[in-house]
Length: 171
Image 1 (cartoon, helix red, strand yellow):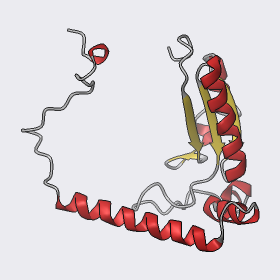
Image 2 (cartoon, rainbow, N blue to C red):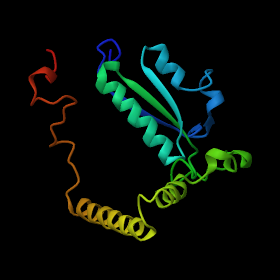
Image 3 (tube, rainbow, N blue to C red):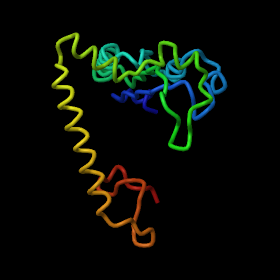
């Protein structure tokens, strides 16, 4: 429907090569998930998700196209999840040659290097950003720990907002 209505929507998919422990070749037959977007009439881009500058460029173009009437766009960023799916998962199903290939690079380290090399930020500025973000996360965790747990018998949940008339459930 988003394609039919030409909605200005950009969807970014982080293709980390595995759905939990199932590799891509056991999930879909196409070579790249971006092919699925094209099959629905959605513009599609594929990008190296470990490369900050490439991602910024491709996502910027996807946003430009969506805003200029090109309808929805999908960006598939190829990378590798460098740890398991959760704390219970050691990621041992990822072959060593996959870990050591191009997408096994640590995208944070690459991004920091790119920001410094292009003069966008100094190492000191990046450290300050990291400290600021870590502090913000800790404040949010502390706040969440102080809040009461939701009571499922008292909560009045709705999947659609009732503040906007167009989003009210149809009865």
